[in-house]
Image (cartoon, rainbow, N blue to C red; front, side, top):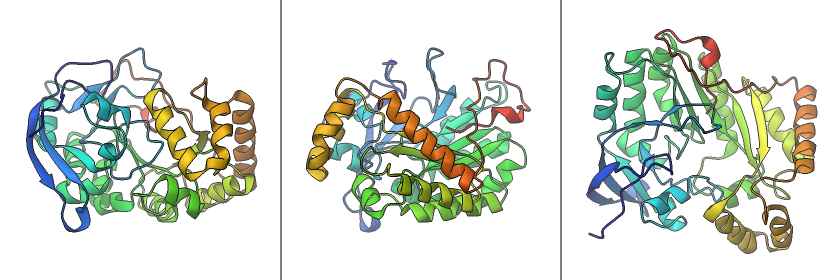
Amino acid sequence: MAELRWTTTDAPGNKSALFDAVVERRIGRGAYTGLEFLHVESRTIINRIPQSSALPFEYTINAYRGCSHACTYCFARPTHDYLGLGIGRDFDTKIVVKINAPEVLRHETAPQRWAGHPIAMGTNTDPYQAAEGKYKLTRQIIEILAERGNPFSILTKSPLVLRDLDVLTRAAETAEISVNFSIGTLDTDAWSRSEPGTAHPRKRLDAVRRLNEAGISSGVLMMPILPGISDHPKQVEELVRGAAEAGARFIMGGYLHVRGPLKDHVLGWIDQDYPHLSRFYRHTYGTRSYAPPAMRRRLGGTIGRAKSAHGAPGGERRPPRDATPRKQPDPQLALFA
């Protein structure tokens, strides 16, 4: 078994050991053919984001590393490099599974240790990717959080979350929770090229509808919208209309954001799949991580006009970090992670 570098947490700047070693490797069979699962025993499962971070959440849980959704633009790809694995195909197929996550979580959220802080899931890789169908770690995690009455949010691209509607409904009775979907486009060609391992975006919209009908707050993050690929006004309006019809509690959108080794990965994909856009992407992102302000303003205007036209809700402001957590959290602490 090859030696791997397991000296990182979910926060890239934290280099303390998180895993002792790979406990077992399992090759995927049947529906999981092409995947390799790396079982590890995690020393901790709740990760605290540094206070200097601009993120709207402070505590996260990620039961998996790597993601079979294989989204070309996934910002979590460089985390595989921290483990000594590749950010390309390795990230898509070598899935780290924290097999003891539920046991560790139960220990870490014991009343004498934990103050009921809101927890965000889906901040690194998708908690409902294919591996969840096999291991059910996310289900066990939300069962524990429901028992504790602990607020949480989930961000996913997978309708598999509907499998857990029973426990989500139970959790919503005692805590503020949300299950939000990342949907960057309804364009079939753009979706299939950029997110080859994900469910069709219209299936995600159906999941948004079903969650809201069940009383589980669910919104849509139209992210990332890809310049020149999925940002035509008609494409944007189609997605806004679909989200509004699904009853999305909020709709927010934004352009692709890339930096570091991810930028090279994405530009390489553009060269291969959209060679006519190569020069444009290098001009747009060559010296920056975000699209230029003028482009972002135009996109914001397009989204705003579409929301007004279709009676969609306004974008919710992301809540500040909770500096003084309480056992009964204020509803304003609902997370849209």
